[in-house]
Image (cartoon, rainbow, N blue to C red):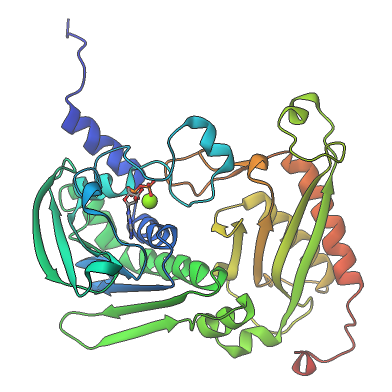
Length: 370
Ligand code: ADP
Ligand code: MG
C-alpha cells in the first residue's frame, strides 16, 4: 500500500500558485492592486502580445525598502495584515501575501523598485521559482515600482495552451477589468498600452487623474456613454435583526446598518446599445463579481425599459459599507465577496432603485440630458 507522506514544499507552492493566479486577468488585477496599495497616483500597465509575452505594471508609489527585498516574494509574506482579526477592518486590496510568490512559480518574474530618496537610482530584484531572492543590481529608476511578468504559465503546459487558445476572450476580460479600476479610482492616472510583436505601442485608454468617476468613465468609454446615464445614489438602511449580527455591530444606533450605493446607470428606455461587460460592481472600490446584485439591478431596469426590451443597462455601482459587513476572503482571487444579509440588502436595493426610476422624467430626450 502506498505510504502517506507530506508533499514536498516546492510542489505545494506550485499547486497553490495556480489557484491564486488562475489567468491573465488575475496577474493584472494583483499587480494593479499592489500599486494602489502602495499609494500610487500613476499606474502604467503595458502588454506585449496581449500579455502572452509580457505584462509590466509601473507605479509611482512608495517603493520597496531594502529590508523587504528578501521577503518580498515569499509565500504568505505581506506588509498589510498581521493577525486574523485585521481581516475585518482591512483597508488594502491585498492581505494574503501570495500574488508575488505565485508569479515567481508561474513566470519569469522581476521587480525594479526605487524609494523617493534614492531616485534616479533603483534596484532590480530577481527571484527563483520558490520566491527566494537570487540577485540584486543597481539600475536607473524613478520613485516607485515596476513589476514585470514574462512568459506566464510557461511551466504549466496545459494552462499555457489554453491561454494562447483563448487569448481573444482573455484579453477582453483583462481590458474590462482594467477599465473597472481606471473608472473607480479617482485622483489616479491610469494608462493601458499594448504592443503587438515589434509593432508600435498603442494606448488603449488613459485617465487623467480626474476627481470624479464620471470623468473617468468618459476617459475610458468615451463621452457618448455618459449621455445615456443617470446618477445612482441609493441609501439602504438595514435593520440588524438576528442576534449574531449584533455581536459585531459597530454603530451606536441600535444596530442599524447603512449601505450606500453610488455610481451611474443607464436611463431606462435609453436607445444606447450596451454591452454586458459594461456592468461593473464594486465593494468599497474593490471590483468584484456580484451576480445576485447584478440580477437585482437588471430586473428592476427591465421592468422600466419597455416591452420586449433585451437590452442590458450600463451599470457602475460602488457599494459603500462598513468593513464588518462583508468578507473578501472567500476565494484566493478575492473576486467573490460575501455580503452580510444579502437577501435583505437586495430587497431594499430593488425598492430604492424603483423609487429612483419612478422619480425620473422620461419625457426629456436623452440628447438633452447632461
Ligand atoms: P499582498 O498584496 O497580499 O501583501 P503580494 O504578494 O501581492 O501580497 O505582495 C507582497 C508584498 O510586496 C506587499 O505586502 C507589499 O509590501 C510589497 N509590494 C508588492 N507590490 C508592490 C508595489 N507595487 N509597491 C510597493 N510594494 C509592493
Ligand atoms: Mg497584493
